[in-house]
Length: 89
Image (cartoon, rainbow, N blue to C red; front, side, top):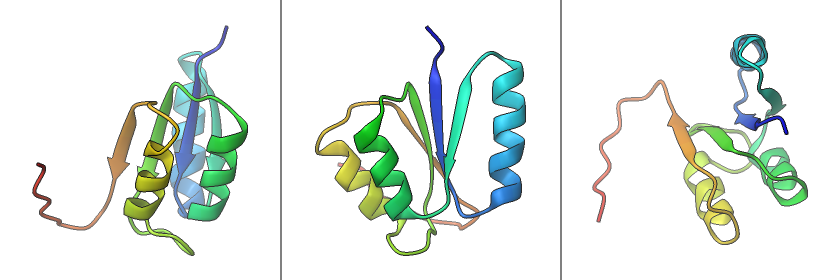
Protein backbone atom coordinates (compact mmCIF):
# COMPACT_ATOMS: atom_id res chain seq x y z
CA UNK A 1 0.00 0.00 0.00
CA UNK A 2 1.35 3.41 -0.99
CA UNK A 3 1.15 6.24 1.53
CA UNK A 4 -0.79 9.21 0.16
CA UNK A 5 -0.08 12.89 0.74
CA UNK A 6 -2.44 15.73 -0.09
CA UNK A 7 -0.97 19.20 -0.65
CA UNK A 8 -3.53 22.01 -0.38
CA UNK A 9 -1.80 25.13 -1.66
CA UNK A 10 -2.54 27.69 -4.37
CA UNK A 11 1.14 27.84 -5.40
CA UNK A 12 1.20 25.33 -8.26
CA UNK A 13 5.00 25.40 -8.54
CA UNK A 14 5.36 24.51 -4.86
CA UNK A 15 2.83 21.70 -5.24
CA UNK A 16 4.78 20.33 -8.21
CA UNK A 17 8.02 20.45 -6.22
CA UNK A 18 6.51 18.63 -3.24
CA UNK A 19 5.00 16.07 -5.64
CA UNK A 20 8.35 15.50 -7.36
CA UNK A 21 10.27 14.88 -4.15
CA UNK A 22 7.45 12.99 -2.45
CA UNK A 23 7.12 10.59 -5.36
CA UNK A 24 10.90 10.05 -5.39
CA UNK A 25 10.49 8.80 -1.80
CA UNK A 26 7.64 6.47 -2.76
CA UNK A 27 4.60 8.57 -1.77
CA UNK A 28 1.55 9.19 -3.93
CA UNK A 29 1.11 12.98 -3.88
CA UNK A 30 -2.06 14.80 -4.92
CA UNK A 31 -2.71 18.52 -4.99
CA UNK A 32 -5.64 20.85 -4.47
CA UNK A 33 -5.32 24.56 -5.23
CA UNK A 34 -8.22 25.96 -3.21
CA UNK A 35 -9.67 25.24 0.20
CA UNK A 36 -12.87 23.91 -1.38
CA UNK A 37 -10.97 21.50 -3.65
CA UNK A 38 -8.95 20.32 -0.67
CA UNK A 39 -12.03 19.57 1.39
CA UNK A 40 -13.58 17.60 -1.47
CA UNK A 41 -10.43 15.48 -1.82
CA UNK A 42 -10.22 14.84 1.93
CA UNK A 43 -13.85 13.67 1.95
CA UNK A 44 -13.33 11.37 -1.04
CA UNK A 45 -10.04 9.68 -0.09
CA UNK A 46 -7.82 8.78 2.87
CA UNK A 47 -4.46 10.52 3.24
CA UNK A 48 -1.54 9.69 5.50
CA UNK A 49 -0.44 13.35 5.59
CA UNK A 50 -2.01 16.66 4.59
CA UNK A 51 0.17 19.69 3.88
CA UNK A 52 -2.05 22.74 4.23
CA UNK A 53 -1.36 26.37 3.33
CA UNK A 54 -2.96 29.05 5.48
CA UNK A 55 -3.60 31.65 2.78
CA UNK A 56 -5.89 29.89 0.30
CA UNK A 57 -8.53 31.12 -2.12
CA UNK A 58 -12.20 30.54 -1.24
CA UNK A 59 -11.66 29.09 2.26
CA UNK A 60 -8.59 29.92 4.36
CA UNK A 61 -6.39 27.19 5.79
CA UNK A 62 -7.61 27.61 9.36
CA UNK A 63 -11.21 27.02 8.28
CA UNK A 64 -10.15 24.07 6.12
CA UNK A 65 -8.30 22.63 9.13
CA UNK A 66 -11.39 23.02 11.29
CA UNK A 67 -13.57 21.22 8.73
CA UNK A 68 -11.05 18.39 8.24
CA UNK A 69 -10.81 17.81 12.00
CA UNK A 70 -14.55 17.17 12.21
CA UNK A 71 -14.09 13.85 10.42
CA UNK A 72 -10.39 13.07 9.86
CA UNK A 73 -7.43 12.58 12.20
CA UNK A 74 -4.67 12.53 9.56
CA UNK A 75 -1.55 14.49 10.52
CA UNK A 76 -1.61 18.02 9.09
CA UNK A 77 1.46 20.12 8.44
CA UNK A 78 0.55 23.80 8.27
CA UNK A 79 2.50 25.73 5.67
CA UNK A 80 2.74 29.51 5.46
CA UNK A 81 4.93 32.36 4.34
CA UNK A 82 3.34 34.67 6.92
CA UNK A 83 4.69 35.42 10.36
CA UNK A 84 1.85 34.33 12.60
CA UNK A 85 1.47 33.92 16.29
CA UNK A 86 -1.01 31.28 17.39
CA UNK A 87 -1.85 30.49 20.98
CA UNK A 88 -2.49 26.77 21.37
CA UNK A 89 -4.77 25.74 24.19
